[in-house]
Length: 226
Image 1 (cartoon, one colour):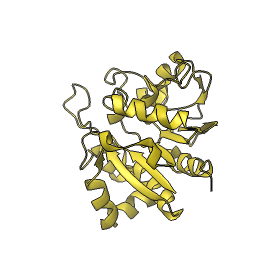
Image 2: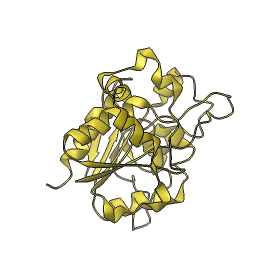
Image 3: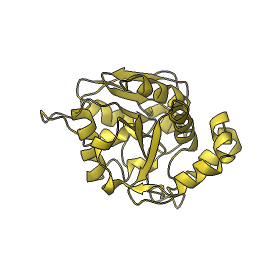
Image 4: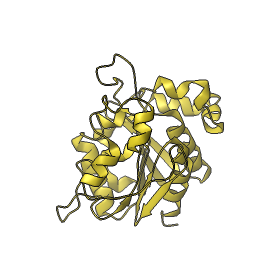
């Protein structure tokens, strides 16, 4: 079983002068779920090498068992520091793909032609595609073979407008995940702010927020043929 994890390379939070990147919990929890299931996990990013960590996700208030495990795991840290380049990756080599969130993907992965094509290829091959929190922003430009947006008519979730308002970044992000998914024809639904919430439609799995990362990963695992 081979799972591809695609992380952001973008570290600027708009014009705020603050840093962003990927959210640690949204990487760490799925990473260990995949590894414990015996999967071979490949980490990639647009630029390769060390993806930028959202510094806020490293604050004490946001630590979980998975993030603490990662901080003690030198092998995982080494793997993360040496991500492969997204441009060198082919869908045919993997059984599923998972995108951790953080605000970074809204700027790079949502617009990256290689990422867009990769997602479209996974979907066309009927392989599981997972994304959590802000990562469903990657579906902004993805389309099905019939030309419709990939999420059109599909049950989806992602970081809510009210959650974005709570972190005071509505005016900073290039687009709101909830609004975009609705505009692209997705059947968007959500749970309570900051509570775990996952939606599955066929091989498409989306999670609402950091608290949803483990469940999103577990659900994705369940869709991979054994």
